[in-house]
Length: 238
Image (cartoon, rainbow, N blue to C red; front, side, top):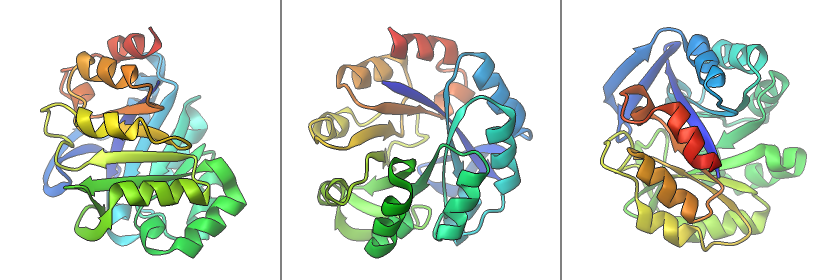
């Protein structure tokens, strides 16, 4: 299983939200590049970036930060948040990003997703944000009447290789991850699943690893000291 330490960006800062609520934002650092370099120094290999501003309005206000991290570290970088045009995908990939995560646009525009897959293959991933089993979009501000399991099967059939699945109710809450959900998702063949949201202990990581998931995202627990990144890397490698 791969470990994806996460940096959520807002106003060029490292922040975390609670359950996707922009009114419950904590700033952890004013220097995302320094944070990324620290993650790399501790043994991190991948980095999961989210532009929270972009997720709301479809722009790229933190692009310069993402580009600096991609070019000035040796980390494999994946980026999501407000990526709704081919130009934006190309811009990120040209900047050195390894993988682009589509969210709202993948849900609302199947033709766009299909074209993106045909152009860039497995460098396109899809973020599936779930609330009570339904798919949420636009920075989690809108919940659609779309079943997440049906949606994931459709993604797989379209050729999507990687999906990042977030249980919004668990994200940033420090109350553990949704293990029954990921246990069920681990049985979905033909698509790599990364668990996102609520990883609070090393046991969470061990349990996810035992399910043979593709990856797990480590966010708030890394910033508040609940999980030491070096320990998390050892658990995932063991």
